[in-house]
Length: 196
Image (cartoon, rainbow, N blue to C red):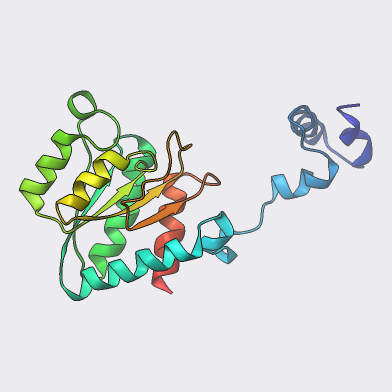
């Protein structure tokens, strides 16, 4: 029976019974009940714990270190939604506070659309002349644009959580990718790991 969780957890208040029924209807049983309601702190989690490939993380770190040492111009090219803007804010604040030459860019939703566009890329190249672009909340299915950037001697680090609709971009310098958290979550764990 779906709602057997109610019978197995003793001394529940009325509100707890309602919560238990809701959780049971979503397939969260007795064993996961407490963990769901009181998850462990994210403070103990590392970027590898959310499913990011360690080799890709190391590639991103090396590229960022080189950019820092050479004082290269970096653009954080974010999506325009709440996740993208939050992600860009997390990344920009971290990199700016450590003295990176970094600027955020959020495309115009109506004229540029989601993710990279030729119009947005050309604007960024003309205005900021970057040698590194960090694509956040998009990029996992954008080989065409990343390849174009590479042909123009611009490296790309992709931080994304979306479902891949194509092969991952081979032209990207690093793919910080997982479907386990939002782009803001990836950005948080990424800068947390860099800080160490």
